[in-house]
Each structure stands twice: as C-alpha cells, then as structure tokens.
Image 1: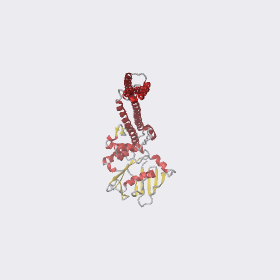
Image 2: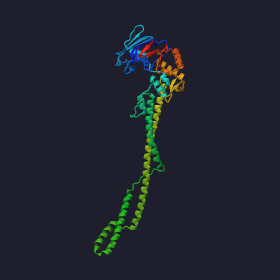
Image 3: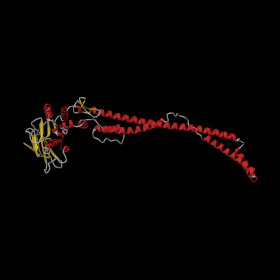
Image 4: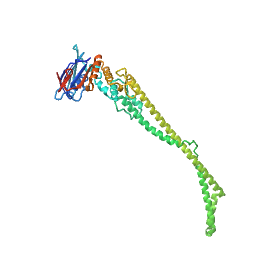
Amino acid sequence: MKIVRLQVENIKRIKAADITPNDYIVKITGKNEAGKSSVIDSIFYALKGKRGLPSQPVREGAKKGKIRLELDDYIITRIINPDRSSTLKVEAKDGMRFKNPQALLDKFISDLTFDPLEFANADSKTQTAILLKASKIDFSVNKLKELVNDSDFTPKSENILDAFNEAIDFLKQERRLVNKDRRRLQATLESYKDVEEIDVVNPQDIIDELQQVEDKIRKIDEIDSLTKEIKELENRLKQLKRRRKELANIVGNVDRNELVARKTELKDKLKQVTDQNAVASRYQEKVALLKQLAEVEERYNDLDERIDKIIDYRAECLAKAKLPLAKLSIGEDGEILYDGVPFAQRGTSKKILISAAIGAALNPTLRIMLIKNGNDLDSDHMELLAKWAAKHDFQIWVERVADTPDGISFFIEDGELKT
C-alpha cells in the first residue's frame, strides 16, 4: 500500500496542505521553518498516534489538528488535541469500519522511523544500533546477568551490543584486580622457591632444662661467693654455713663443669630447633601463599570462562538475529556487513540502495519511506533512488530545502501548500 492522498490541518507548523502524490518520489520542498518536516511527520503521526506524537503536535493557537491519510485500501483520519490525545477512524474503501483501528494499523506498519539516507550517512555504531532496534533478536538481559554472575552488574544501555560490551568490560575490570593479586602472590612466592617442607619441633623441654641448668650454675656460683665471705666474715660464719648447707642440699652432688657443658649443649640444641622452626614457618607461609594463588588462579580462569561465554552468547544472538535482508550480518565487533563486506566500505550509491532495501524489508505492507535532510542527495543519487523506488513499487517522501517552487515538488510556504 502507498499514499494516495494526504490532507493536513493545524499540525505543528502546517496550517493546511492537501497533497496527491503523482510519482514514486514525493518531494516536499520549501524554505527552512516553512513546515516541510511537519508534512513528513504528519504521516507518522497519523499511523502511530500518541506513541509518535511530540510534546506540542497541534499548531500554536489552533484548537485541534487533523490528518487524513488515504492509502490504496484504507482511509485513515486522526484528530489530534493539544494535550496529545487523539481520535482515530479507519475505513476500508468499501465503507467497512473497524472497532480497533490502531490494532489494524499496527499489523501492517513496521518501522516508519527508518530513514534510509540517515542510515547510510550514520557512523558504524549508530547503523548497528538502528538495525538491531529494527530487527528481532533473541536477547535476554537476565541471561547476560547470569553469565556475568555478579549481583553488582546491570547493563545501563538499551543497545544490545553496548550491553554486551558493558558486561565484558565489567568482568575485565574485575579480572584486572584479580590479576593484580595473582602477580603479587607470584612475586612473594618467588622468595619461597627453595623452602621445603619440614616438621615443627616443640623446644619447650630444652628451654625448661636449660633454665634448670642455668639456675643450678647460678646457685653454685653463689656457693663459691658465700664460701669466700665465710673466710672474711667470721661473725657471719654460722649463718653462711647454714645457707651453704641449704644450697648444697638443693644442688646436690653435681659438678659445675658438667653443668656448663650441658648448658652449651642445650643452647646449641635450642638454636637448631629455632632455625628448624624458622624454616618450617617459611614453608607454612609458602603453603598458605600457594593456596591463595590457587584460589586467585581459579577466580581468574572463572572470569576468563565467563567472558568467553558472553562473547559466545553475543555471537549466538547476532547469528540468530532476524535482519531485514538475507545478505546483512553483524560482525563480532558490531560492524554491519553486507554480503560479507563492511557496509562502511561500500560506495555512496550502494549504501543508498542497500539502505532503501532495508527500509523496504522493514515495511513490506505499507510501501512508504520518509527521508529528511534530502538535500544531502545530489541529482544523481535522487535519480538512482527514483529508479529503485519504481522498480520495487515503493513511495519515498523526501524533504528538501528550496527557495522557490520548481513546478514538480510540493512547495510549502508559511505552513501552506503553494500551488
């Protein structure tokens, strides 16, 4: 279906316009701010209703706006109020009316917002976003969050590829932090490379005996000192002898040289145990570090695996995407390909034809496309587009800036169609 007649009253800048297309290319011309865009937009408003209306759809000062859109099979009339509410009537050419007219329109209207020229001139990322928005992709945010497996992650972008990139960047950032810990542990373990496992020995028995020996040595030394004092202090002889006798009973019949030798032996043993325990302690530190490293390695590998799964899921989604054209595909980096060649590398003429074909595939029933900024098309490209439209039975409405009427286009001046 194509547009047979368009009548617009009090829509945005338009006061009144009545247009009956007579060719596959319908050019709406006029000076800037004359109301050209309002004509193009009114087609969209008539078909989409409130979902497509701007904040002020009715011309300033008017009580209501009206759009009557006559198609090959239907007549669509929409009355729009300043508060963006509207009434819709759809009639078949045989007089039949429909109880749910918007539902009928939604069945044969796909995406009138697709502008082939805007698409052809957009950067690669924007092209991909437009194409994905217009395509059916089996993508689940919950599955992506499940693959990330982190409660702190929620994609911010509604663009599918951006959401994938957010997930991958999120995990890569976490992996960088994990890798930092991994490198730290590896560097620390380098100083433990010669440390081997050895038993830990309890030195307490040796320490206790050493203390006993030292204590006995001190007591023997005290006996010697007291013996000298006995000779010097006869008046204290009795007391000192008593003390000496007490000490002798405590020490027993032990040779001092033997105790000194035993002391040296015990100190050597204590040093050996202390050294051995230091090595054992280092080994225990090594074991703990190895355990930490194993845990970090496991975490790092898990993040790697999750990133790979997300990349695989992205590839799966893109591979299953129901794109408008069979030859269209989206590469792993998000670049649009046509017949295996990047869309950006195609020539301008080929880009326009491919974009038009995408628009046609998106609107198989209502064979209409709307192009704003038509001044970006030179005469050769306009002719190319006209031939394509004629070949594929499509009606393309093009907005272009012009100072004066050319006798062919529909010229808008001060909100009205100038005849």
